[in-house]
Length: 300
Image 1 (tube, rainbow, N blue to C red):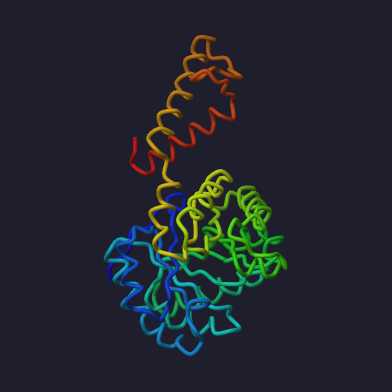
Image 2 (cartoon, one colour; image 1 turned 90 degrees about the vertical axis):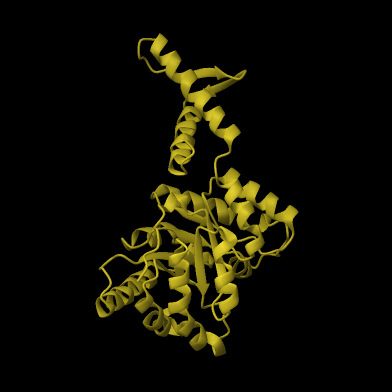
């Protein structure tokens, strides 16, 4: 079986969700440029077509692997068809299992146990299958840190859009400000425990709105984004990859601080002027992080 090339979590910018029973849509995901493709067996797959979707997994995941793309399947909650999903798809060795409507750590522990069972049954290296719980409710949001820490398999968390808004009782708007607190809290809780966070998808189809949403995503500090419309994969990848101008500025910040430290005999420098602006230690550290990320993308 062809092995997919596992990217480091920090480099998984775009997570494209595709209808689980639509073979053509699943194959058409390959040239989009998405870092991770997700066969979606929950929202995008009517219950009557889930059996068909499960049967497609083998061919689809293998095609994605051959294209060098990370493979993921989003299964239903275990008590609502998720065990049947796992029995069918685990034999095809997805890199990542996502599960919808995670609200408590206990759900992740149960998913971990189920995945471990199928790893043993299908001869898959123990612990090699990653888990990405999907946070789609207010209860899940307030349990984010506990969910992130409850299993060594958890490699990232994802926050939802539509189900979260519905659970809040908020009015859904194209601007999406009703999700500002959710996105901020989710990101902070993930960051507090060093867990990669995946931002909620932009669920409208207009390019202007997608650009504004991605600006907010980037400004908040997200490194990854869920996508439900393939046309936005290039938008997400562009926003979440350091630009040449950003990299050049980061280099100037680091060089200026390093030169100032050298002139001071190695003493700590609290601030330095870069391009006419006062840059402080947090700016220096952010510049170092951006350069490190650019190196991961092969830009240095």
